[in-house]
Length: 352
Image 1 (tube, one colour):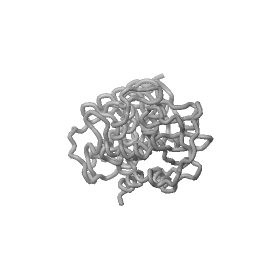
Image 2 (cartoon, helix red, strand yellow):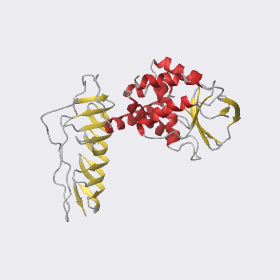
Image 3 (cartoon, helix red, strand yellow):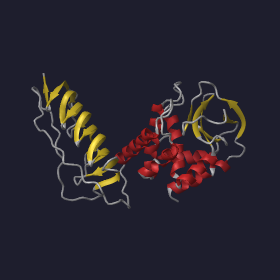
Image 4 (cartoon, one colour):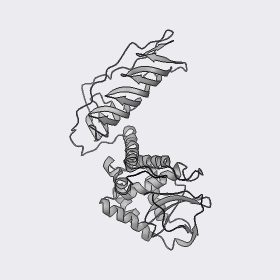
């Protein structure tokens, strides 16, 4: 059975799999961390607490979500009906993920996909694994962004498309930011970034890739005059052209015209990040053909601009400011042997 289908059946069956899981309720303390997926108040004003161990079946479902990223479950999973939500919390030192089975089933019905329930569960798992529930600082927008990014990464690993990874937050996210939750656009962007990072690290061959509608980004110009007065500094080189292609070339996922996507070049190098009018524009990451990071930072009109980090094939690295594709401004050039040059760069050259 496919992972997605198996997870769907498992999650939907959670609400009936428990045998008397909740026999007591205690009010949450003022400092209790409670992250609800939708950002609304958790109802009722009490947190359900189990007097028995977590249900084995439910834990297996969660473990299947965790397996692709190699992490272990460090919390208990319980059902609390009538909460109309799914949330992560800590009570008396014990971590919990509490969910309403009817709520999970309803969102699947509304979105017409089981990925919505899976992404919600992954989001709450992210809170626990990233320490959000125990840092004593309560709910914060940055925590929601990090949990959303985590869910995007996980859903990619489980086989969801970029659109499927964002379906839940598109249906449930708030259009306006609150004191604990960002507005819907920011949350969608976070999920997309997580998904794209996973795609860049673990590209999957997809059997049903749409014909690219966006034109390939313009070829990047390079400056080969980068040098220092004492020892050579390697300049970013244009990718070596190869005659054969063994995988899909072009926009392999997302929106490579005006959005966030992944574009593969005939050289097998690829870019994962933001696009505007078909150009790399915004935050993004370039990868060499073998999958290693080439550049991570910002782009303007298809050129490396503002702050970024360039990784050279020989092990050197430059971290600093770019303009028109070359170092311009303050930056540091790190040599593979441990030496470094911290300077102000002008047109790719360090100046005194």
